[in-house]
Image (cartoon, rainbow, N blue to C red; front, side):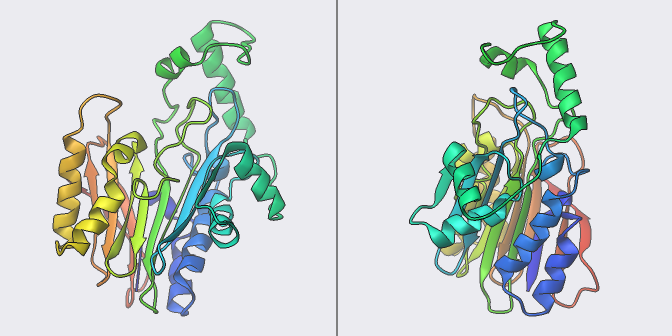
Length: 304
């Protein structure tokens, strides 16, 4: 068994590992782990600790995938709810759809009985407002009727946060699952979706071969269909190492558009794993737990 996740997973990685060791379902385990991350206010790229969009609204994205039947559930631009993986799972289990976004996703969350307190922290709201004052040079900027496109290129993340939390696992039944959750880029244009809720881009899982998930610049992995390409390469007989290398080549070949760093997390059906940092200046770390380890290990991603 294995569970692989990015560095932001620290609030929930141990719980996920414990559940796997107890023989529980892998999807249950990683959703439990992600919910701990979503509720942790010091994680500034996921859940309650995330940053708002240009209008000051929180919009959350998340997804799950069952590698046994290749079903997915995903939600994007959800308001009022930061535990989005549980909503995504309900999409997979209750609907004949794979993805819901915006108003429909928010409505579905309430319909399924999910409740959430105000998802915007006062600290984040204050930082958002001060940034708008700085950019507009106005004491009380009114964003409701203003053109936002130019502001989107002028404003940068307060902590350069373009991250997600991703969990990949293979459980004791040899079932492979993936799950993602994010609040998206700070100050994003309202309605923006990154790769986190898009199957094949930000996540993919197939119990016959393996799984992959990406963090950071989702605009790039959407274009390259990065997660699916890794699993497909393994289906065609390439090793995990070779499959990730092929995905890296595709990302590096992109031209134009917004180009920055990407981190790939991947596992295969034999519990091999690889995490690579493509173009991120900062040191990137991740968590991994395999059967027999005393506790999850916090390691440094390979630069490629």
